[in-house]
Length: 204
Image 1 (cartoon, rainbow, N blue to C red):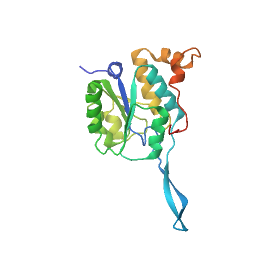
Image 2: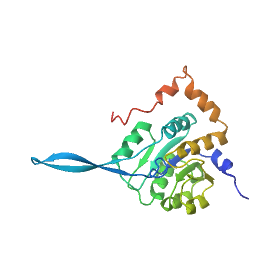
Image 3: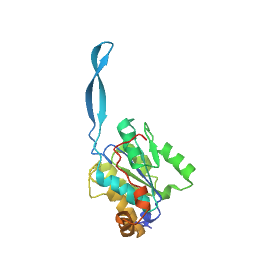
Image 4: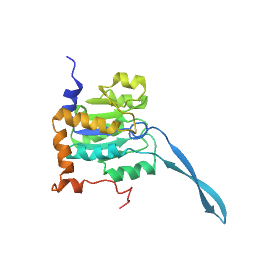
């Protein structure tokens, strides 16, 4: 019997995102910055990425819905590390060429099953996890091969709210999306402010 994406979503406890092409549009900006070296001048390279504020708000909604969130990415970037701190993500794995390794670690440490994990990806490096997790989500502009194997394809592209789409799909399937939204905007709710994000990558 085929299990619907909604039925899969109801079991999810943890959402894991790829970064480039999922939480960003896949663009990687390499910016040269002048630096002084031994009395002369040189330059170093700074990597910059653009993230969606809609996805950031989605992380807060997910947390209000009792979900944990994290990222697994092949690249290593301080920009990503700063964004992860900004969002107070539960799981942050960088430099991971084979993404099932951290997934297995999460399963063991959190006491969950693969059926309780959602993974959001866009390229073939994400397929090993998508083939084993409970809910495999592809962003709207994912590679065709990836979309073909996904249980759900977001209406929006990577870096343009796709992460939020995945979160809202899960919360809606669980029947708690409206409650989470109302809780998030409730001025008297003491929980929402404590989950606030957007400190601009404050290192503290």
